[in-house]
Every structure is written in C-alpha cells, then in structure tokens.
Length: 620
Image 1 (cartoon, rainbow, N blue to C red):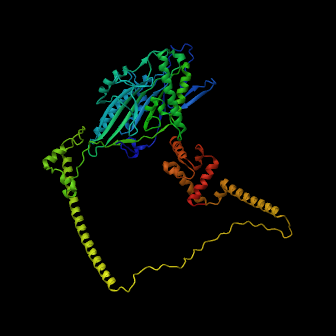
Image 2: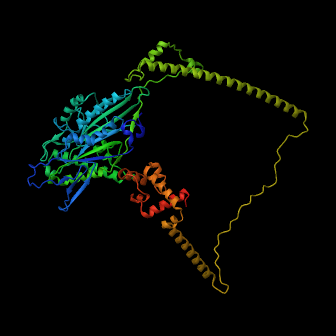
Image 3: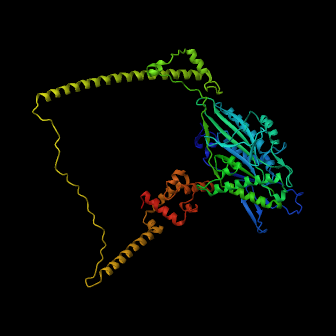
C-alpha cells in the first residue's frame, strides 16, 4: 500500500518546499496582418519579462496591466519557454512527486503549437519527455542504488467521453479513485517506454487519432482535450526495495469558442458546447479554490476537472501556459484568458512523495521450535528441509508468482545468517522462561501445603473448645456524625436609607432596584472601556516585556506550522490557512501589525488578539 512521505524527508531537489504555488506563464502569438482587415493593430503588448498590458475596453485611453511569473512575447522560441517554465518542475517527477503542464487559451491562440510544435520547432511535450529520459540516465549514473522505469498513457476528452488514443477502438472509459485516493482511468492503456525514440514511435500515430476539425478561425481546430501521462517509477535495488512513483501530466486543452465567429453548426456546435462547459467548470474550480474555507470544489462536475484534481489545489507542481492572440477580434477572449490566469496564479498546491514497498520484496521466514508449536503442530506431517533445499527456496521467486529481480548471493548469505541467529535466540530465552516457571510452581505448591496445615489446626481448635462462641462482627448502633456543610447566605444589596425618609414598601423596593441596575451598568461600561483601548493595558506593561512578547508572536507568524498558528489566541483553522497563504505570496511579516492585512482581522480583533495573547503568556 502506498503511503505519503513528507517532502522534507524525500531525497532530491524536491525536498525544499511543502507547498507549491501554481506557476503561470503567458505567451503572445505573433500578429497575423492578413487576417486583420481593419488593420487596427495589436491590443496587447509586453512591458517586461513578467508583465504586460491590454487596452481597457471601457476606456480606450487606459490600459490594464497584469503581472505573471513569465511573459513570452511574439519572438519567444519553444526552447526559451521550455527552459524558463517547464524544465524546473521535471526533477520533482523523478523524486516521486506529481507535476502538471497545461496550455490554456481561446481557439486559434496557438496552444497545440506550444505543446506539440513541428519537426523544426518541437513543442513542450517532446522536449519534456526527452528531458525526463536525460535526467533518469544522469541519476542512474550518479547513484547505482536506484533504477528508473518510464511509461506513458495518452487520452482525450471528447464530448465528455474519455477515449484512449493508444487504443482507438476503446469506448468511454470510467474515472475512478483507488484506495490511496489516486485519480485513475480504468482500462486506460499504459505502455512502458525505454527511450525517446520509442516514445515518438507511439506518440506520433496516437496524436493522429485525436479529434480535429476546421472552423472559420482555425483550419485544424482541436475538438477535444488531450492529456499525456508520463509515469516514472523510482525503485531501490537493495532492501527494503522501496518504490517512489511520480506522474507528469502534459495537457493540451481545447480552446473556448464563440460560435457566432466560428460558424459552428450541427456536430461542431455540440462539440463547442461540451468544450465551453468543461472550461466553465474549470473556472468554477479555480474560483472555489481562491475563496478557500470548507466549501465544495466542483471537481466532479466535469471529467476534465476530475482528471486535473491533482493539478489544481492538489499534490502536483503545476505550470499553466496561457496563450493569447494580439488581434482586436480576439479581445474579449484574451481579456478572459488573462483574468483566468491571474486567478489561477493564487492557487497553492501541497505536493508530497508517494512511496510504497512492493509485496515482492524478499522476507526472512521465522521458524518456531517444535515445543512451542502446540498440539496442532504435532498432528501435521513433519517436513525435513536440508540446507540445499532452504537455499533453493530462497533462490526461487520471493513474490509468489510476481515478477521480481532475484537477490544477489551476498544478500542470501546475510539472510541465512540472520535466520540462524533468530532461531538460536528464542531457544535460550525459552529455557530461561521454563526454569522460572518451574521454580514458581514449586513455591505455589509449598504455599498450598502450609495453608492446608493451618486449616487443619484451626478445625481441631474449634471442635475441642465448643464454649467459645464464633466470632461475629458487632454492628455499630451509633449514628455517624453528619459532615458540616457551609451555609452561604444569599447575596443582599443594602442601600443606606435616611432615617427621616418615609416611603411605601413597593416604592422603596423600586428605588433600590434602579440604583443597583445603574451601579452594574456603570461597572460593565468601565470594563468595556478598559478592554477596547489598547493603550490602557499596554501602558501597564514593561516596554522590554512588551517587545519580547511581540517578537515571539512575530516569529510564530513567520515560521510557524499550521498547528502552531492555530495555537495562537483567537486564530482558528481558517485564519491559520489564510496566514500561510499570505506568507507564501507576500513573504514574511515585517511587524505584528501586518496581521491586520489578513481577511477578517480588523483593528478591534487585532487589539483583542494582542491582549489575550499577553494575558495567556502571563504578562498581564
């Protein structure tokens, strides 16, 4: 059974972070003058390696600026995009973690070109697979203790149906969740590959099976979402034969379409509706993740979001390549794509290493001595095993029919020596235990014999002296003294009454009640005023102690775990997660007062937080 291993305990370059924010890069397609009849020029332009601006459709004299992890202009090459955005996440896959790279954008913005490319300019998919094989070969050369195996699966989501591109005759495949909470596609073909040439021989014909069609905006428009899964298994050659499995998702999404401009009818219109519905669900998932809290994330509303569950808010290192077009006719599509990319940038994933110990690992058989086996073992036929037979048994398949590599001879010798040691140690312990039990039995028999002698003597004494009445415990007739209980008189409020005042009883009682009510209200207002103002209680503290306590709280806010943050006063689970998210995006807190920038922490609540924290620490 697979188990989750914290990232900090994993080996490799993936051991530095426990959370990973979705990395967003924007690529601007070159301007096509032939298709732009009005010659209005581009509506988007880059401002730097990470920023761009777009014309504000409400006011043409203004622009809207966006900041992302990377911006690739019209002259950017495939190699540049791969090196800056995709290559940094690939080492995580070889360390047992998941990674995801997907292209998003409107139809005709160049998503398929970015992912697949052409023979002269290969896209991100062939470059990423080639890099995976290169990293595996390099790591096997550096360390001979681990071995790497690579496999691939290729599918498309067409009209909300999951189809296997490596097996064109397949029907709609169901999406399941296994016992380890992994999202799997039941019946999906998985092909082991040993080199990039082998991958290309399988991937090229499978890509031709993907559903495409011609529209007014694109001669070869993708009518489905294509997902390539590269699975890397990292196995330890020596005991305990651990295995770490990482997955790389390379996703080419179909573009959102405006049917008025594409001219879709009939089947094309149905395909466009399915594409837009799945992308709309993807947008709802991003919105739900940004809201946070315990609300429902609609992963199951679409098969696309179900398969991307690990990539958005899950356990994968995710990279999104947002493709946009510069022409004015694509303005609203580009504007929507940039807003979606800006929201996706705020999503935080929590990757981990998934590790398992295979059942085919050789185990050392533990034999019990014949004396400890009991009556059932005596009825079984006695089997004689020679040393040669025992050696042959170890040399056989240790996984009960499962394919597994045979252990080396030195390992067998150590296992046999360990077996002899385990066989010898229980025998000595058993002899000591039997000796102790025998001594205990002798003591018990001696005590029983003395007890019988004493009982016989007592019987003789009772029969010889009949005048002595049997001893009975005398019942005490004296009553037990009751415990004194404290008598607390009821609280009375006495008010001085002038001796000369003469009033009716009811009138005096009403006057007294009004005076008591006014006194209580004045006391409550005094307490509320002392709690509301921070300066009253802060002025009573030593400045040195006050600063020391603030530094302790600031240290917990900057370096504390989720459990330590929840341990702070008035900070619950929701606000602790918001603090972690703020820390991931903006960095460390400069001062304790920066806590007011967290959503839901007002100035009054921050003052209460400080006072309760200082009171709990014993400063007040």
